[in-house]
Image (cartoon, rainbow, N blue to C red):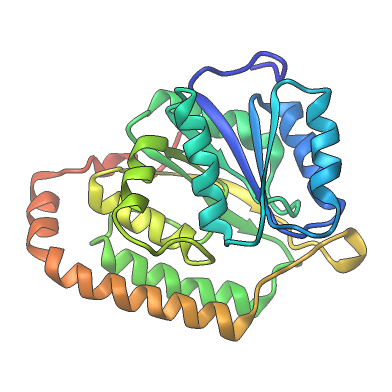
Length: 264
């Protein structure tokens, strides 16, 4: 699809917090491959809100929402989801603002979602030498817990935020509980959607960890964010125990459709 021909079903949401000039590059790349695009500026004080608003003033397919203070990635995505839902969009691809995600794969992920609208299309990261070894190993732990919590529903990676969600289902999940508003959003979203019966489709996608010289900005804090993930998996495991009989029955009858695990 041409980036100047807006989709009427699939929108793109980019949450951003103090990403610096890289967010402008990311948004330009996203717009080169898709329309419409929503950027949710999550209380940034680095001047990027004004830059993005200037871009949107000349681009009717770029929309910028500025939150008054930092609320967290999940909260920013939820703001974007509500905005696109109000306009009738059924699906949204989320993409980080820091340049780590592959904008050129946006059409591929959107096409997969259009072909399987009842699924969530999840990026399966391909790491290069720039990936911090500690974080690569750490995500294996989180993925292991996710696999257990969903009884092997086929989620290849629980943390990679380049993915397409069914909008109504995700908003319904987030409306029912107060979590998923910060760094815990990506993992808890896929677990709870799998519990709801939304099957995953996994598509490989490269991830690039940019150096400071390349304009990379990271807000990841090892102790703080791993503590948050630990608390999240504790909550999910407690709920998993309560859901286990239902999940076992669903798995026995083949619902949700586990054949969606890998995209073609």
